[in-house]
Amino acid sequence: MGLGNGAQRPFQLPQLPPLMLTKSAAKTFFLGGTALCGVAFVLLTMDTLAQLPSRSHQEAMTDQVVRGHHIWNKNNCMGCHTLLGEGGYYAPELTKVVERRGAPWIEAFLEDPEGFFPGRRKMVKYAIFDPSKVGAETAAANKADIIAFLDWVGKIDTNGFPAKPTMNQAGPQIPADAQRLEGAPPFFRSVCSGCHAVGGVGGNVGPALDGVSTRLDEVYLRRWIANPQALKPGTAMPKLAMDEATLDSIVTFLRTL
Ligand code: HEC
Ligand code: HEC
Image (cartoon, protein in one colour):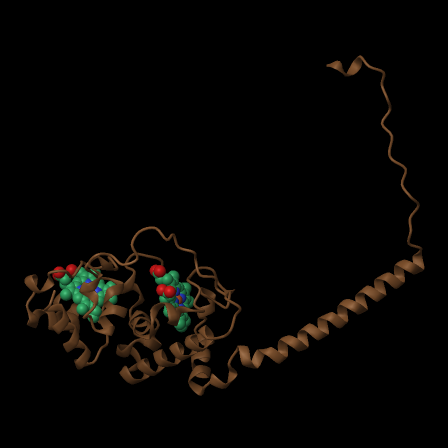
């Protein structure tokens, strides 16, 4: 509005100094810079290569780890999962999966992935991990191999990758009734707890097991856990491979609830 009133001063570009680089100076600058960066690149690469053996703890790369790697490649696990940040973004990052889930959980999960997350995105059910397809021995060996491989990857010194999420610190760390899980056998804590809560701690895929001994007797519990499908075809609880001693310890524990 007020612009038109005052005297109009034409806008002027500030005076620029003349260009400093001659053609030959630019050439020297380019070649020198390239050579310098090249030398830095070679030195840094040598430094990385020198560090790799200790950071990737190559000495721990057993035959089992190598077999696990073949399983990983052959079945294209990378098509859905990332490992060390590389691969598909469809499924969870697996670099620290052994630390996060534990071997018993992973074994049970690979045998029946869908049972663990009914109705969710699907993880492939591989025949190579299924005792009814390839036999108990081969399935167990394949699972041990892939877990050895994932465990080896998880122990690579990755400078802190993947970052741990920062959790809110609010609230008590241990819920009031967490002691109820205290006497639980390790298999129960690592596998059953993924789906069942006890004392408010654990997953909610299956019903909470507080007071389960008042609902179900010992014989039924034993038969149910050994083979849920046999008692209730189509149930979402998977048949979990475990030895007699583990089954005993779990039934004994459930009887205390
Ligand atoms: C078609 C895609 C796909 C392929 C291929 C695949 N997965 Fe998965 N996987 C998934 C999905 C999806 C999940 C997450 C399950 C969910 O949350 O519902 C998953 C979960 C997992 C988990 C549990 C991760 C966690 O933190 O809970 C493991 C372990 C795993 N996969 C191992 C493997 C292995 C080993 C292979 C190759 C033999 C493989 N996956 C191939 C899709 C895939
Ligand atoms: C992948 C998830 C999953 C896992 C792992 C799992 N369960 Fe279950 N469980 C279920 C589901 C779902 C039901 C309900 C089944 C139904 O009624 O069809 C169930 C039912 C039960 C029941 C019957 C509860 C009731 O009140 O009727 C018991 C007992 C039980 N599970 C014990 C166990 C034990 C012990 C383990 C570990 C050895 C285990 N479950 C592992 C999903 C799971």
